[in-house]
Image (cartoon, rainbow, N blue to C red):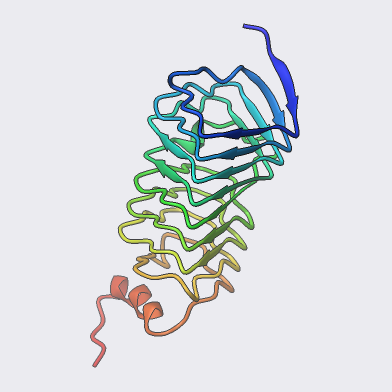
Length: 190
């Protein structure tokens, strides 16, 4: 399969399960209202790209490169981001649904999750220092052996983080949600 370079192109209302996206490197491209359901994006590279209103589910991401990529109003359901190429991996999410996705051992320093549904997302062993969870719902999200130093949870809801299993030094929290950190200490609060 030959690979090509695509620069500053816009793709709109495409179903890439029906019309294959050509393998290659996409730089400064915009994808609007496109479907990547069941698509194999292995070895693709997306640099400074933006995905708006796109749908990803059962999308294969083996060694896919996402470098300075923004996802806005997208559904990214059950994706395995840990399969991506981690060299210069940098993504941000705004108003996205990432339910049941995984970021195992992900390098997500400074990543922004704004207005996102992060239901049952697995962040185990992820580097999330300085990450921002702004107005995001972390219901049943898994944080285990994570670096959450200086992460911002002030506007996040429904998180359950065990301070004994994660590094949370200088992380930012707000009341009353911060009380969820105490549930692991078997204490009574009245």
